[in-house]
Length: 343
Image (cartoon, rainbow, N blue to C red; front, side, top):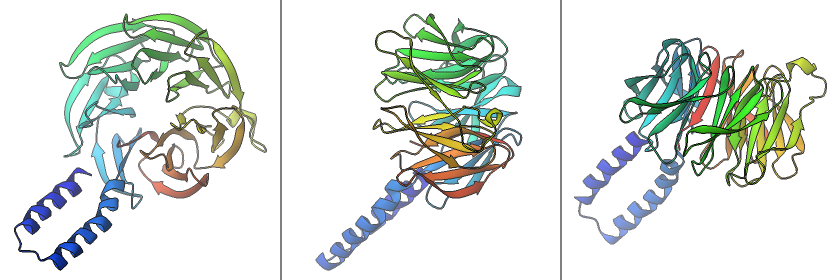
């Protein structure tokens, strides 16, 4: 974290002014090797609390809430700026994007976003943030440096999820009422393909190589795999059926994919389960028990942990990806919705 690194740098300058013999220098280097892994592993997890109008900050080492950021009304999706200096928070009832400075952990700017912003994604190549405006049936494109509206992309009824390919060429917008995934060419800013999904599509997530997009359907309890290389059609559909759990509680929402192509994780809402999927065979390997009404997911930087937001139980479940088991429950604010981990 920045404040740890700054403190270490200051201490190093002080030590550099001391007269060190070979033995002392050896001890110092040894100590540095011990301290460095701790610094390298430090991470912060940000959780939006929809009914508290706050963002909880979790220390990735202690797995405890260390800070609470006051933001606008009804915070949901979040994303980091391209340079990693700010956290963007969609505050739906304020019709805005709050921009949080990651050093001070204060809202420093607010950008008008259009009606009812829900999901936001940042362009990997340009200072653009894409916003699903649920009540306007559009995706707004905002330049967050110049603080202006670039364009509006018409999509279907009640846009929800937004996903961007790793190369920044394609955007997928899901529309809940239309039951569609709209594939947008980000060079022309136009929707060029429209594909029918399961009932009430929610989240869109690209694989690390950009060859596929996984789209969850809340009511359909499915994930549709879209071929993003050739046909732009649905190539496979994964269906979820949790043993011993009422079918109507199995609602597919958030999706997270490991970059090595091994696992896919899908939050299954009121079933209180996370599905574990083999990315290559699309086989459901397991259902992991987490908190109540699991909604969204995020992997940490080295993908050793998966964090889930559990709205009804008001906590975050930490899953060990290597062992595929829940290791901790962290209380946060009321109705946690989104989660992102500092890169």
